Image (cartoon, one colour):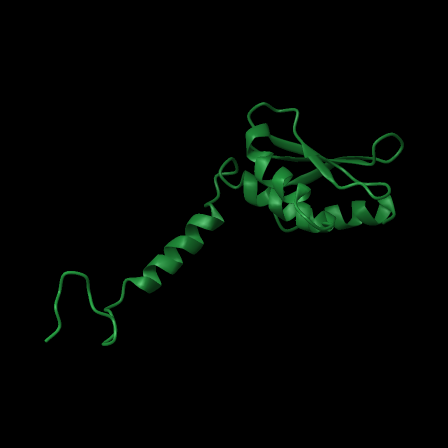
Length: 129
């Protein structure tokens, strides 16, 4: 994909979350830099050929949170820039003071499971007569 299209996609992605695209450079690395308060920053190196995207942060506080996104990128299949950015955003939710999406979905699942057991489900330790 042409770099200018990647920049446009990144700018559009930023409109729906706290991040800003603060730097876009095509000459050396095809690099997009992002920043959000309170000091959350990362950059994406965009592939030029058959390479994959690469995400990294120069902030020691941010770097551990990128592991999920790095694992996702290295998993099977090509990823789009938007898929990578969404995975990074999910990874940084705790740093941004936002609830963790995975916790929310687990609580929703758990709440669905707390109802009374149906007639064909026997509770452990309770005999049905």
